[in-house]
Length: 576
Image (cartoon, rainbow, N blue to C red; front, side):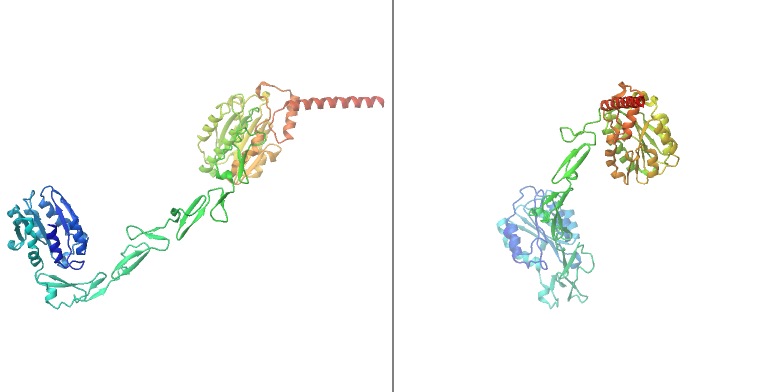
């Protein structure tokens, strides 16, 4: 059978503009050996035929005819369009009776324009051969006694298939190619050309002109066809239309210390955040290690040349781990923070305010007998988010702060100060009695001008013994901040132009909020000692520090010196 097929091919003029050949093998299934568009030389076809391995199963001839009609003779598989009148011929070679129906599907194939030759070998069923073949049957049905004799029919098939070549017998006048058909011929142009109205001459086609080529970058017209090309720095993708930028970094020879970034026609090196690209355009050097590494500093990271270190707020010490700071565990305060929840703050900035509050909480050692923290939010009205006696640990407070919902609306700062004085620092809401000498601290946060008067309740707050801090951001009014703040004013108010940069203000409050050696509610001091404490707080940055043992000794020494001066004055008076 291989020899038979190669003998037939050997007598054909094979080529893309001549005869095209495809081979199908079938048994219980259909196998496409090569299609009409696969090979255009006899040598390639013969190699493929010699490589065929028999399937050695059943005989589903109807299935094979169905495949030839629906697949093999489609333009997608290389068959030329029907309007070109190229004969479609199928030669079916079988040695047995079909195991499926062939009559109906063969009729459909013939009606579709396929001319069928049926060749039976040995025990092939003649009725099945006649049911498959095209009329006249005497010219399309053949029965051979053995496979050895099938080669004798190759020349006979050549005559049947080809007949008279009209392109040879007549003066066709075709400029490019003449295609012979039974009893006639027609002209065909080479790829890249179109047939003119005279049916004989050809004109070149600009395949790029109609814009349907789909090339992403450039379309290049070539003899009526086209090819896509990419701009420098790109390569043509598998679909032969789109272009992909060449990843020069993937070559592995960029030598970038950190990151390689591909660009058309090359690449460049880029450093990670906190590093600067060096003059060699490859290596990187740290500029701010605090931004480039996970430093883990609890309070603040300070970059140095090629390194960094952690620092703590004034009044606290860096612990042995080099990252955490000592809490102000020895000092106890009652701290109420009053935060602006007006519409001008905006939701995203309100979240930054809450983070600011929690940074302050991190400076404190919260406990029922230590520092107590309360939170008030205000806009057009005032709301206690939680009083001083609500939570007893920093984690509880920080969680409650993050759960606070934004109020929006106006800015009634005076009303908020009134609420703080009358309610937030009451013993009912957790403030400890004044006799306990626990410093009371009020911290007011605002981002704009108050819509009511603040002067009266700012004054009353300070007169009631509350040490007031004022924090302003954005459009906060300095005059109002100074009116709220305790003396010395410069140490009790701060301002930041932007919400995103206000966290540095925490450092300004760390020392003042954390007394140095407050003894808590277990010690009650005399009025004289309280006056000494007030004097000490007024004249130092640690305005909130409780009276220490050193201060007590200083007060006693002062009293002794005063007594001695009085004795000297008496002695001088007696001498006079």
